[in-house]
Image (cartoon, rainbow, N blue to C red; front, top):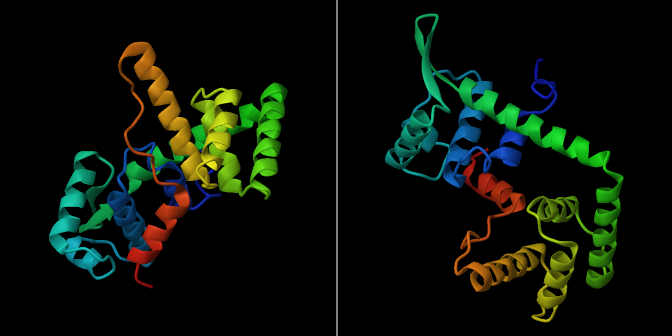
Length: 215
């Protein structure tokens, strides 16, 4: 069955949503977004020198990033009509497959009335304590915490504990949630698989891309 999102959603949007799932670093994300941008403008052969005109990195740094992307089989050079062309086809296929998986999971959640009630309860709890409406990104983050198997009690306590430090951002609450889980793991098992760093949220990634792109 053909992926229904290929012609409905831009590759740039899909990549911003899925790049962490695809194992892309922030630098790799910016490079592939710029490659896609240049391909849409009709450019075919794209290398580090060309990209350095658009991205605030040296050609050698971009070449290293592109080599990593080649090793991951996310970009490739193909001969089209006798001309060497840079292709994002492999990345495109994997990105849209990942995006479809996310959308399928979201669709299945909508049919789960119990989960919807839990989420609505968490949303109301957060909005009441923060004294404001939550943004779509914040709503999505709380949803992801449930996916990560944090309990409702853990998610609520993370907010209350963070507020005691006079911080109110979802990022700070996420750090509290992560650190609480890590401490419990260490007490129970002597170690924890929780990451040492909190992933950048999508707003920071978009800001990074805007800063590096030249219009």
